Length: 287
Ligand code: OGA
Ligand code: MN
Image 1: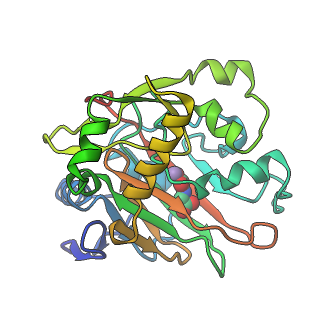
Image 2: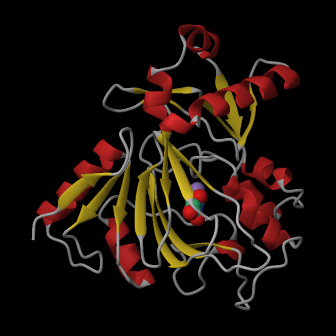
């Protein structure tokens, strides 16, 4: 069965039908998915009740997989699975004021995954296991478009600038204690240009509010102001696609030129469980 694509938004996203992610997939199908992924940035596959092992096998067609730096968020059985959830290992909702509860709301801040790495991830695959009745939508924005449409004055101000991205910073955002030193040593802060040159030559705004601690060479106040200004520009309504989840939806996105956020939900009462695989990048962020 050939794969079919339907655009979900003028700037980003397409729904894919005709693919069973439980696999196995032939080379032509993998190639078609890869092309659609690079063209549309976000792909939606509906009604895909895959196992963690099947998700890992599907994701490996697109690169090697990252292992998340904090053991607490990984699946014990399948370490490539990062559990994006407000439910603890005891299968109960994490108290909202507990470290795990607070950590789980970091996805309510716009970001691109693993921008805290020297070679950030290429993309991710996210499988919805349990969804909430209100809120908990995932929004995506196209950063090539955000850069292309940017006023010349703002483009000139950010030309050549670099930002520091740090995993520890994301924890500070939620007043979490410093990481275990051995885990922290694996994710030291890194600097990336604000304007990223992609392999095909396109330029993209590279911003990630969850991890972007500061812009280098500016005062603390100027840096914060510019980060806020860039995030507001990048996430304006017209640039954003919204996905409302159903169980066993699978979304796959490109982390090099798309950013995303989850809308708040009642995390004290509703369970939200998503399983993510993260496709490792192959190149540092080039300016
Ligand atoms: C992620 C993330 C989005 C979601 O997995 O990287 O930001 O909808 N999750 O849970
Ligand atoms: Mn994310």
